[in-house]
Length: 487
Ligand SMILES: Nc1ncnc2c1ncn2[C@@H]1O[C@H](COP(=O)(O)OP(=O)(O)OP(=O)(O)O)[C@@H](O)[C@H]1O
Image 1 (cartoon, rainbow, N blue to C red):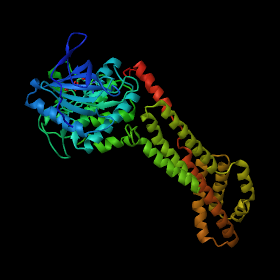
Image 2: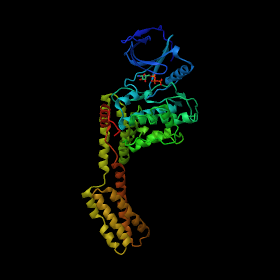
Image 3: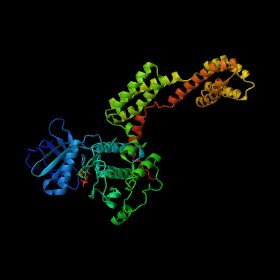
Image 4: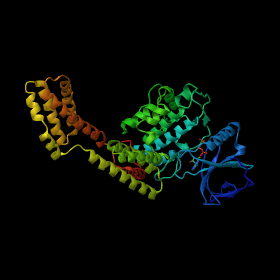
């Protein structure tokens, strides 16, 4: 809510002798940086918990019509936007000299500086940042907001260890509904989608291109159109050549695919927001967010219900599905104690899933052999001596039984299914009544074995390992060493 500052325009002197602006209720401690129309300071609240904030101070006298519009737009938009990956605007005030935007403080600096200090970022870290940026972008799309000036300088980091990224600087942002077009040139050429320059009309898809450029720069240390002169930059923009990954780099196929699809010059060929959210490199549904834990709890509740009802196969699937939400929930949790408590709980659920897997595992050797020796297979083979096709099918099933007892489940299932195909046709036509009776009884047994194997195979490979701790450790190691991807 806007409310005028009661403070008189005055200033405090810094260590270096420069003047800080002054705002009642806050102590300015440090200059964080300055942009086109504002300077940003670190400050803390005099009252309460002395919360640290960032205050963007806009000198009113420096505002022309365009920058006033930018600022008002930024305030209007930021007031409405609340997302874990968007810098929050707490309040705004003004006095005779300045307009103050009191914002969430991000102590890790901006992504541009972060990349420069590390040269390149490892794919694991880039993937985490990208998921967070995409999550913010999807939220912006839901609110019909296009940022229009996404670049590493406008992406802030919450801290230097285990950082979260947040989108800042909504000075150029605009309410844009699907199909809306814009024709004014805005943004920074290195990060600007080609259609802004080449076609002069564009829409919210320009942000997808900029995300692609940010991703490229994080991985390779420079923007795809990085140039030594404006002429060179112009030539690269006005070109039909597809953007290629630098020679000799080592990125996963998924990662390469998402960069290439974001950096499509033609916006109609560019990946859409929906496709991006579902892309296997991003998989927003299973990305750490404030709702991860809620989703995990809801899935695990269903698992327990199925478990209680004795539907073990379903229960295992749901326990494992809950892990897909528990892991991002653990990543999202900042408090170490809570993380540990969550891990303990997850371990209990996953132990139960493993226990159930053992329970539904098809019979092992001794039991199986007993049923093999007691089954009338030998009699059936004898009754089918004059029928090569049925003999062959029965031998295939016999092999399946042995494979099952040896726990070669995939092979056993294939052979059960193959043999049963023939057996079933005989059941319809067989004139030998003794054989038909025996065959019919055994077919039931084999079908039920095949079903058991199928439902076991369906869940046996499902993951019950919580790797969140390992992942966090590796990520931190990477960040500390600043691993380089260009070899
Ligand atoms: N909330 C914040 N927390 C910490 N640092 C911040 C915050 N907001 C801005 N900064 C720092 O202040 C610098 C200036 O920010 P600002 O938004 O005014 O301009 P800019 O994005 O650098 O430039 P321009 O507005 O010209 O695009 C940023 O680059 C960043 O380093």
